Amino acid sequence: MANQEVHGDWSRYEDTIEKFIQVIAKNMSLYGITTSVGRLYGALYFADQPMTLDDMRDALEMSKTSMSTGVRTLAEMKMVEPSYKKGVRKDLYQSEEDWYKSFTSLFGSRWRHNTETNIEEADEAIYELRKLQEQTDDPTLKEKITLDIDKLNYAKNYYSWLMKFIRVVESGEIFKLIPKEPTSDDK
Image 1 (cartoon, rainbow, N blue to C red):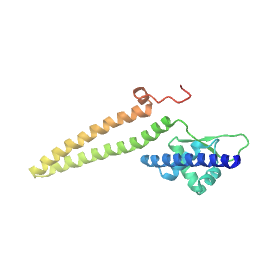
Image 2 (cartoon, one colour):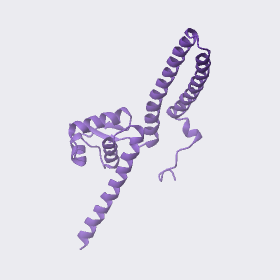
Image 3 (cartoon, one colour):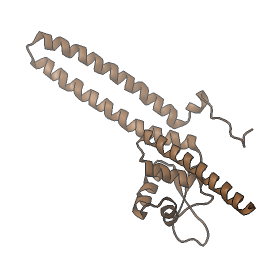
Image 4 (tube, rainbow, N blue to C red):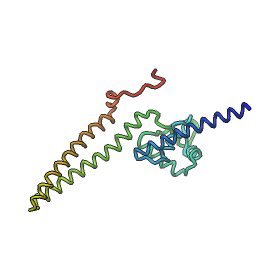
């Protein structure tokens, strides 16, 4: 009977961890990361030791190619890092345990790229509208273009502010304004 209880406890434990891994995967989709890559991160995060691609494939029942692509994606976002273990020839990987660091890296790279693109698009629209404004004889259109250029400049001001915010996040200055929550180790 005691053995069945122990097995039941482990089963409940695994179910609880799996539910949380699903939450991680779902939340990572907010950052443009697929659910399968989110599950991979969750599996690495809760692994007791670094994992090989074969370990990951077995744990998640996904192809080795999918695991390799997922690990590369997570490594680019600094959420997974290579690991070394004496005597093991295969590549090992472990999750970045500092979620604050992962967030700042992921947020910064995703938002920076999109914001820079938006600034470029606003500049291009302003350039095209100014050319049109000089060429048209329609006074109503000229007035509308002036108003829209003002709106585009407002957007550029917002994107400029957003770039400052992104720098505050990327540099870690954000933690001076909003301190990290203490862990049980810090208490």
